[in-house]
Image (cartoon, rainbow, N blue to C red; front, side, top):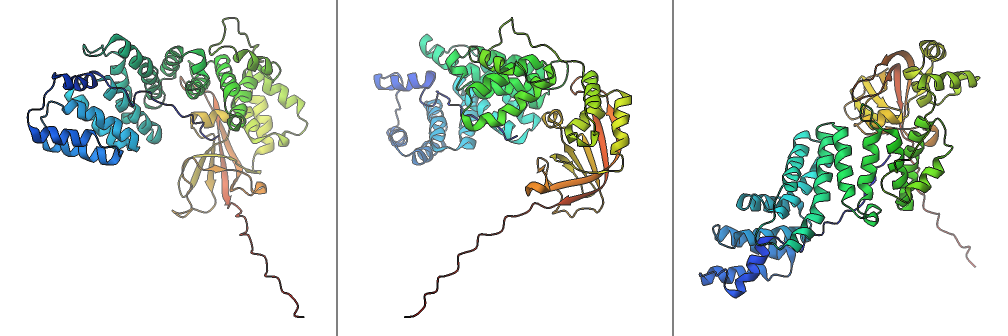
Length: 442
């Protein structure tokens, strides 16, 4: 599933903390630049209208007057200027410099943590995520500067605090794998929004909260996961509903055993960001009981979907799993799924939704012929079916092992296939130009 991305607007670009107030006071004599050359350079830099030209002039001013009494104000302006010119790396550098001058600057702390959050999302680097989280945690503890009015501080923190909680939540999820902490932080963030804001700026993190509740482990709560997936489905733009619905249906069916009653949950979720205390979803039979019913009701077990076969092998009783395996052993099968890792000799793939969410392989395909360096698929590449024109990974069932649950993973099966091969994606033929028309001479 493609990532669902909603734009989040930070309403601080035109707002400053104490330095803006101090700089404005310069006109009344609170700050006075005594050196005429420095004053002229300051005026020239701060009055530029083009963001790139203004940034260059402000940087030049700081290089020439590194100890200027307006240094903090200039750095504050640089943050806004790089925001306007769309240069996050330079914006982060300016914010970092401002924190060296004023370690408790809310605006610089906010932008630093927000930009590092973006880097964390892009790289999944634990240290980058932890750096973002530490800045956000610090931001939540900052106190109002004397030069900032109570009203301005309320506006600033009203915009900043939800973002800080969101940054910490991401660090908990990616950097620390602490999904309980992730749930708590996203919940704290969303409670700071109005009901209307949860339908717009808060919708992306509502989706993240749903995902956190769906993750295997002690903190998994599929009832809450279903509620928040339904809430996102209710207010997502039409183009995204088709991406969200499979997860919503998957986890509802996993918990309840069927899709009956799901429409009622969708309707309830329209009214509130958080589930009411009276919300009840009747749990299904145990996984082993459901699997036994499936085995009993399916005349030909070979017709089961690949993900259902994996579920039987992972969660079924030994008798049911062995019954299915007796049919699968030494038979070929396509393996549609997302590549977790790959070498020249072996490709590890996540096939079920649980495996994809946890980013763990449930199928291991040992290849018949080693791949060249160029042929090795990258992590995240998704195999499909050749019948649909997609790249297809095939193998022959060899062995399987049930893997017990841990504190962070659900019980699963590790299915090993041998004699793996790859069918390349069928490329659409290039459109042919129509032949030029020939007219008979008269």
